[in-house]
Amino acid sequence: MGGPVARSTGTGGAPPGVDREVPGLIVKFGDYPLHHGGVGAIRSLGRLGIPMYAITEDRYTPAALSRYLRRAFVWPTTGTEAPERLVEGLLRIGRRIGRPTVLVPTDEEAAVLIAEHQDALAGPFLFPKVDAGLPRRLASKQGLHDLCGEHGIPSPAAAFPQSYDDIVRFAEKARFPVVAKNREAFVRRERPAVNGTTKITTPEGLLALARHWGERPGVILQEYLPREEAEDWIVHAYFDQDSTPLALFTGVKVRSWPPHAGMTAHAYVVDNPELADLAARFIKQIGFTGIIDLDLRFDRRDGRYKLLDFNPRMGAQFRLFENEAGVDVVRALHLDLTGRPVPDGEQRAGHRYVVENIDLPALIAYRRSGYTTPHAPARASGTELAWFAGDDLRPFFTMLARFVRPGSKHLYRLWRTNRRGRGAGSG
Image 1 (cartoon, helix red, strand yellow):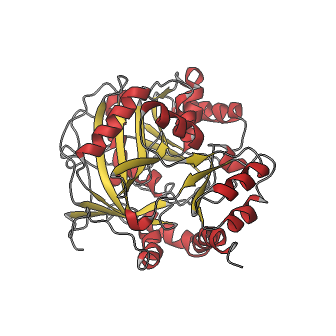
Image 2 (cartoon, rainbow, N blue to C red):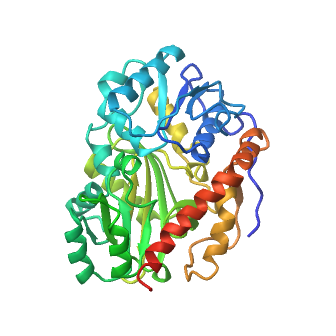
Image 3 (cartoon, one colour):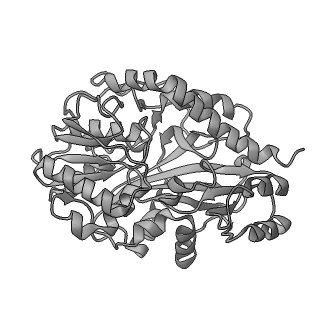
């Protein structure tokens, strides 16, 4: 699939009226230095002349070395720290910046912390005001499942075992394969049951994994939607204080890593009014404000879109989506919080996004997977790369330097986790 590679330089095509006096701060907790979403947000706002700051693990992460970053605040965290310590750290950074700053969280832990400590953070920072408990509930697999049930949003059937005995009973009756996921934000950092979404093909495989989950397994066991009968979709949007979408985008996921369960590796912008309407109605019903990143799977067996994940923050692949006015969800966030109008416009249908370091292993894994994306265009209208940008080269080369050994080890570990879920029952 061909198509020109997008190369952004300067502020061409930028939305009008940007407030360059209000900086942005990328907020992340946990040790994941190779995060292309953070780099994308720094570039997106930095290209508009907005001063950008970021929390980084060290001074040599790709984000820390972006030409569009004014300063990296080196603050190694695990995501398991006491909330009070994280809040104090953010306030200390706010005092160093010295002026009101828009917060851009890149993980669930950051989004939940900001929501639950709005009063303490409201002085030095700007962020969408939302019901304090809602982001935690949305980031929780059980909380999301319950909300879907309350509002009539399709989602896969799920069980929430409270003990090993519950898992044994589940294994006796369940239809395999099933999918295991960590249930709660924060807990996934402190006591992860699985290293990401894990497909388990047999009762024996489930019981083998569950022996390591402790007395109170923090997992959700979810219905598996067959990849041969499914198509993965994504929705990214920004909603104002009235839960009205100021920017809303839909796309189809071609590949992810780990396969069919992890981060987007290759995706296309595809217009889907039905999906956009479903997302907008759900957000209105629950009263959410801010950026969302939704993962849904279209089940061809019953013709329904089933909500798999709700990330109440910027998604790593958000730069896939931009409208004709040059607005993506991070730019919409900054415009809205600084009192500027958010220009409307059609999304760039046919545009694609490629994450260079994970798309190659994903491509190999998908060759015999049986998964198809009939809604993906035959040819891309343009391509945005996650890491490489002609006007900001250092993040790309830093990623390469840091990815070779630890990145390969990480990909291998994720692959082994999924393989163990399949193989434990085959002996």
